[in-house]
Length: 89
Ligand SMILES: [Zn+2]
Image (cartoon, rainbow, N blue to C red; front, top):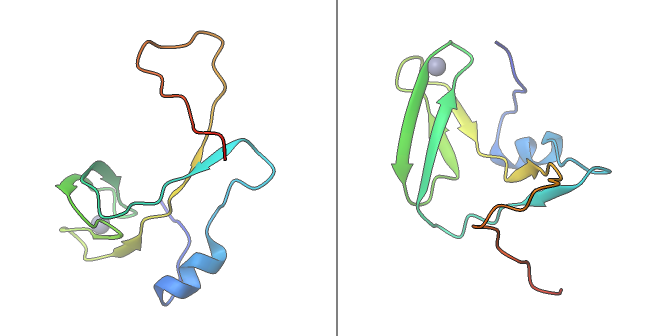
């Protein structure tokens, strides 16, 4: 499994998939606690629970990743009970 590769966080920022032109969200991490599964290019599936996870390192192969905050939005026809309504911007 191969993904994008950049030298620095700033370089990664320039080539990240921003989902532009499609419904999308942008997570501003703000240091908040996150629970994330990592599917690494080496095939390892690992997990992290922590604050300030702007970057993540695979414990098996040492690959370091920037965590892109742009996420896909998939429109639903049925609204779940836990849905949060966004503020008017
Ligand atoms: Zn790995």
